Amino acid sequence: MPFLTSISLGAKFVTAGLASVATIHAAHSIYSSIEAREKRRHLVNEGEMAPEEARKLKNKARLQDAASVGIAALGIKGAISEWKEMQEQRKECAEFDEKRKERHERRLRKQEERRLESQPHYASSEPNLGRQNYNGGYALPSGLRYQDDNPYHAGVPPPPMGPPRSAHY
Image 1 (cartoon, rainbow, N blue to C red):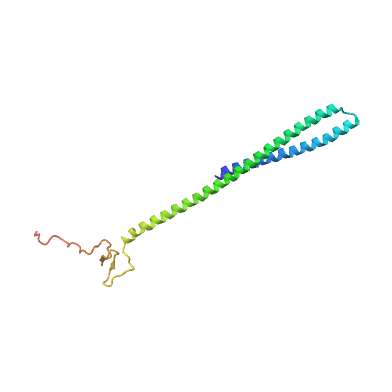
Image 2 (image 1 turned 90 degrees about the horizontal axis):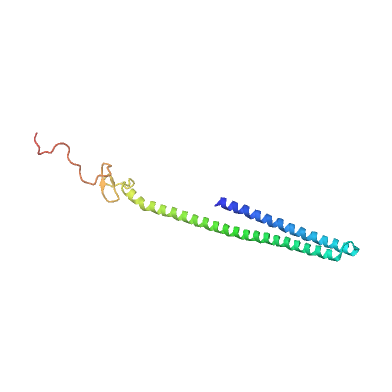
């Protein structure tokens, strides 16, 4: 996402820069045409330029001014739409990051719940050595107790050692 944002950010700056250049160019063009108008009026008053030629130049200057203003307006419109699009993208990115963090937190919460749910099963298979019986040995949470620290001892005595007593060799 940061790469996309930086590209869009660059595009926004390029668009804003071009709009600024077009606006400055339009303002300069209009200012130049105002100066040219004053010059034409002075030339017509002195008789150095015919009124018909001054009218042609005036119309040409008006057309150039309108074109400059139109181009500047299009540039400004493009910059504004680019700016709005960037704000919308920024908002979408923020929403996506917020949802991503929520999903991550939810995932961690579920993992912790699963860990806590599975923990008693593991803990119950081992004796709690902190709970000593008064008869000696330790008691398992299930109530079984053992004397020889064998967690698999279930209270039944071990089988006798050696061959069976009834067998004669």
